[in-house]
Image (tube, rainbow, N blue to C red; front, side, top):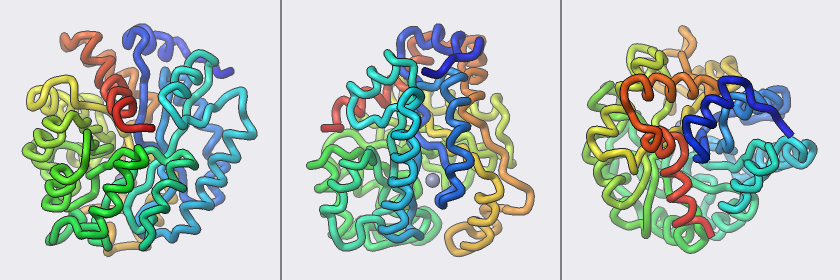
Length: 335
Ligand SMILES: [Zn+2]
């Protein structure tokens, strides 16, 4: 069993029985992740119930995804008193009742499926609960957000159909505009933007325009905001700036369609190396690597909650933002 800090208890009181879910936090995608995994305890201490960890993105092979799943699942299995692998909505409740941090996984790009849509079911069985279409650049499924986008392909549609069948949530973060738009129309049920900020607050091509936010909300989905400085402002990961993004989405679509995916990276050196090694995926003008990227860690979310309360937002809004809405989508989509 893990313990909550005083701040964590305070956060729990604020959400009043709700689940606190950071739907995207990043470990290095190599065996070095073992060194950082124990820091997950800090999330629980600070009031978080459940985290979603990526196991790969488009630049990685299937084998890499499976190896990361093996590593993370084995860590959970070796620490059963602290962590709960989350495969169902009931597992989320079980984790909370037993004082454990719930963990599930995500995949950033359909290259992970290669030409075999039935890979979706294997990943789902191993704990992957959402997958996005294309990571910044085009792949066989659709276009990325950093280039001219030719839309969702027939292969992309096949993968989405399989996800709808299996119960895996479709995410449109990192996709191109046209691909996201077509995927929202094509997919059955709610979709999410797991970690995308509004472009009308900060103009960066990784951020999304208001009409995609509205389209996602109209389908019952959730827009998860990230705490990455270069997507919030001028490498600005302050709580005030984050709240400007939160309040923009609240004004645009109300409090039933907003969530959190901080995108916090535990290994900052790994982030810098990854950016430097792949300029085609992370162009230097859009991802300035030298400075180090400012980020809001999940253990500072409690400060966001406090600030929102000070600004007059209700407990109900806070509860929905920090996990209530994502839980609704999980109930609708997971099988
Ligand atoms: Zn991402």
